[in-house]
Amino acid sequence: MIKIIAVGKIKEKSLQNMIDEYLKRLSGFTKVKVIEVADEVIPANNSQANDQKAMNVEGKRLLEQIKAKEFVILLDLHGEMIDSISLAQKLADLQTYQNSNWSFVVGGSLGLSQEIIERADFRWKLSDLTFPHQLTRLILVEQLYRTYKINNNETYHK
Image (cartoon, rainbow, N blue to C red):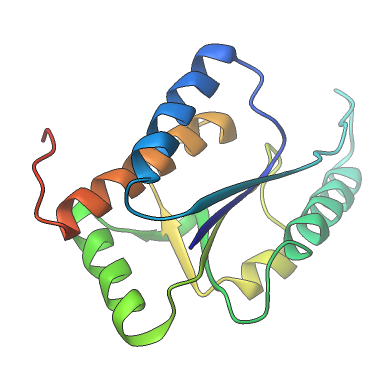
């Protein structure tokens, strides 16, 4: 089973529709549960200390959704960048040899608390580019769908 644990809600209807389409496609391969935790309201003139406090609060909310035995994959700008084939192999190996319960964690706009970084079993960097956390969720579900297509030897556009 896959859990996607993310800070905040998707506000754009068109983006949510695209995410829902990939979740529907994924349902043919595995169960996916999406958990959205509340994001902290951040004033425009916020201090760095207040930003850190907000990240810590969001981090605690994320951690509350993770069970002890789940394999946690953190989407992180400072993680390891891998291609789709390598991701498919990594998840296939995890499912076969370690754990088939995965939590993919998407932080909020401020970033990730140290607590959630330390809990991660794997830190995955999608790109050298920076994406809004809402768009990251779309990229994540598309890549998960691609992974299942690859691992099931099914065709998918390149």
